[in-house]
Image 1: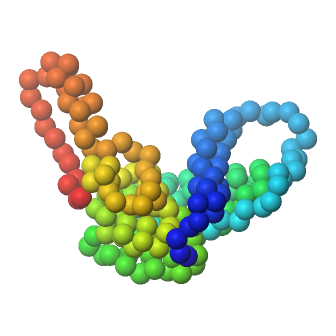
Image 2: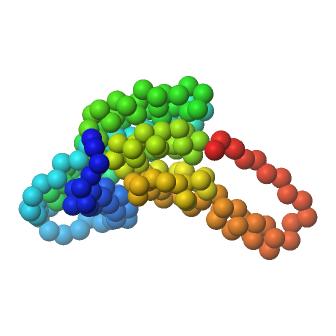
Image 3: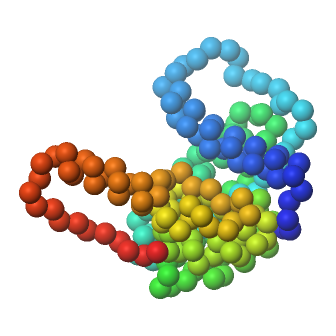
Length: 194
């Protein structure tokens, strides 16, 4: 643990980027029989990364956990199989939710395991409960699902990332779509947890 030096942070960010980009690229190539002999030599020095997850195994969003966890395991296995000089060890954890507060024990456990990054949580409200602890330890937090506008300007020391657009952007896009549709009535169902 501890705050990264610039070169160490760059190496870790690069490794995490390799996991994400490899998952997307390799998923797109999954049906390709390809050529070549299936072997490659690692380039340069090896980078071993521990990446933790704080995804919902319990709580009201537990139904989202299995596919998210499977995605992290798949991406890590593809990076490891590529023999590209990066080895990923996934350490799974449960974010729970703001009711059962599984993150109160899981985040310290993941940090004590020496993870370089934590993927999660699925809920903005849950991520807001532990982001300060994660980035305060100098560890990257990356969410595949946080949409709260609060993260757009959050003081995260440059260590928080997300792939989902903010609710503000989604609201604008959906508002325009609804206005253009000519609908006369509208009903909305929302989860207001952040």
